[in-house]
Amino acid sequence: MTSELEGQVIDRKSLRVVTGRAADFQALANDCVCFANSAGGTLLIGIEDEETHPPPDQRVDPALLDRIRKRIGELTVNVQVLPELARDDNGGDYILLQIPRSMGVASTSDGRYFLRVGDTCRPVTGDDVLRLADERPSVPWETMTSLGAKVSEVDPAQVGRLTARLRASDRVKDSVKEKSDGELLEHYRLATSDVMTNLGILLVGRPANRARLGTAPIVQAIRYDDRGVKVGKFVWDDYELSPFELIDAIWASVPDFRESYEFPDGMFRTAVPAFDEAVVRELLVNALVHRPYTQRGDIFLNLHPDRMEVVNPGRLPLGVTPKNILHASRRRNDGLARMFHDLKLMEREGSGFDLMYEKLLGSGRTAPVVTEGVDSVHVTIPRRLVHPGTIRLLSDTDQRFQLTRRERIVLALLAQSEGLKASEFVDRLELNDTENIRYWLGRLTDLGLVRQVGRTRATRYFVEPGVLKAAGLDAVTTLTRVESYRVQALILEDLGRYPDSAISEIHRRIGSEIPLRLVRRALASLLDDKRILPLGDRRWRKYRPAPPIDRER
Image (cartoon, rainbow, N blue to C red; front, side, top):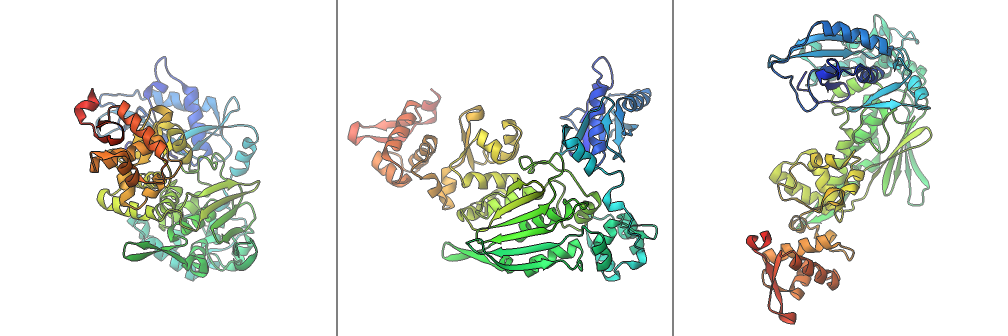
């Protein structure tokens, strides 16, 4: 437990928050309200934020457990806490404070509301308090049994397919796989006693009962031509399919998902699908798992010649916005999300948009665009390739260095641009501040794939010119509006290969489309910084890289 990363359901706190003169039970109460209003969670008290274990010699007074229970009870409403004393493998004591999900809306005793989103605790104010109450019914929609459908009314074929997939998944514990089909239904809260829950009806119920839910998903895929005229339509509105089967049916039925583009790759041609299967499936999973099942509305897949737009009814979960969706995670339907995860239809919580960024940017396309309407969420992904060379770049570098997902996203993003300022980097990746950039860069600068110039928010990041040239993306760096730092990098790269070159030779090799005045300006700046040395004078002058000893002076 102590080694798990902080996130949606776990956080660490210093022991000082509950002991000594620095004790701050109000701050602890706020955190407890956060977890209670979300999916519940665990606070590890006695472990510092940057650590994974308590100090080996740390001891906790057992009387502190009663004090925590009493003070949190005084400072909160609808919050239950379960503190217990724990001992780490290193011998140090800490407090394991479990906060179950509250049945109603939780708040502090002075009327403040908080919500856990990702790994942060956020205040809820204004109209969002009403949204919180609406999204937090005392009985979750998934566990309701108001339809009174009996377990005997389920579709045996769907139950058999579902339980077979669960037993074949390596995400399901062996002890769970050993359960009977009926026990599995109760374990995943698809049934309680002999009655099916709403979640059970949605996943394994017969079509008639699924239709009675009123909010079982209906999906429409509509094709448009380049003038925006509707030219085709596919509809899944008969309630015959469970959400799992809907995903497979949609992928198999829409002809646009079979199309591909070809681009030259040396002596051969490489085919790239118009829509990546992993991206389409992730979009459908997001639409089915995160929609509010208390609200009616169809899911639309609007297919245009240059893009696909997925429209889902309802707004984003409270606390999640188009600006933080890459990092924030908040489950709206816990049982459905758990089932999709165990069936390996979705990755770990919060990684879906990471996957889409990686796949889209890595295939030479732009990142997905998320917008929120009055009562709907729109996610748009591009269809056409913008920078095919990105595919070769990531393939080559991944074979050599086995890049992480974040490194692949950053490398593809920078390769498609003229370089990004730190502020632009933060905006593109929806980061909180520039300090988080280093976590996304990973090893890219150490491996010589990405270079940075400048300081603080004026820092610029760009792909090493030689790496771009090898991947056939060097045209990106030789635009007429290319900036001085980029020209300097190209000149240094060129002189490293061809020392003692005249300006005309340098200009021809790095790109004759770059204005000569920019090349002269970049050479003058490099001379001032003593990064290159001149040979000769005036029209006969040539240049070579300065040796390391001269640059240090």
